[in-house]
Image (cartoon, rainbow, N blue to C red; front, side, top):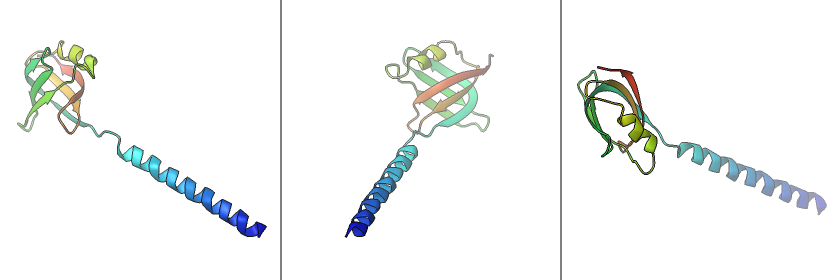
Length: 105
């Protein structure tokens, strides 16, 4: 009887480790995926948190910052002018996560 009890306890522990490992994989997959684009600033309104740019392929991106969640981005937008070359990271909803000036106009 003791052997079956030990096997049962070991089985429960192994099952618990398996469940925990699956939860951690799910957490990693849920991590936010960011897009990045380099382009020329067409317009910027730092107070409204809005940025429009066009990339080398001619695609236009209209992106939005969230001042309450990421005030650093608003500060970055205040340093940008139309014509600047920038690299912007944003999420799948078009929310800006970071802005870096590559070259001033």
